[in-house]
Length: 225
Image 1 (cartoon, one colour):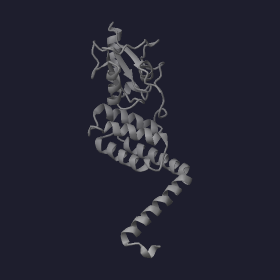
Image 2 (cartoon, rainbow, N blue to C red; image 1 turned 135 degrees about the vertical axis):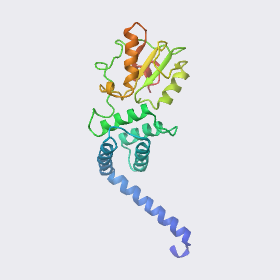
Image 3 (cartoon, rainbow, N blue to C red; image 1 turned 90 degrees about the horizontal axis):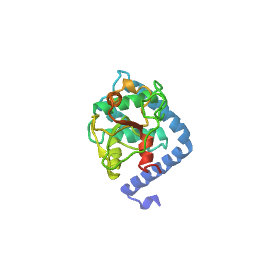
């Protein structure tokens, strides 16, 4: 069989065999691979946040590492973090708010903060209680923090599709400030906390701004599967 193959065909066959063997190795060692990935991710996160900030090149390095490790993993932390970092770098620039959000996420990954995926707490965040029914048509929405639904752009597009308006800053004309699921009780120390503080100030002065959770926004818009 092999005598009839030319060099190119032999190379392709070798590549296919190596790929098949790697697939088998991954299949039977997935648990160990994922454990090592998370250990590496924790160490990597600690290194990236050592100076208290995450810059553009560090975010791009993290994205590259996640892409390389995604192929051998179905770990939800790897998948979720890759989606979030990719969304942040989608426009080719990591802005100040995105940098602060990524710093907060990596702190949680490294164990310096609450667990990754922890939902926003109504007991520590200034969320209106009870949260009101949301009216999307011709009402303005502003998103802050990292959302589980998707990137900020995806949340904005979903809001527009429901007839809502998208705001880029907290003003007295804002109807709803939506707090992302990944915002924790340390929000006051993060960059996006300024939006929350400003909304609270307006609300306390009598401006009817409703501060709600991402979960409530998604549920009200029928976006939860």
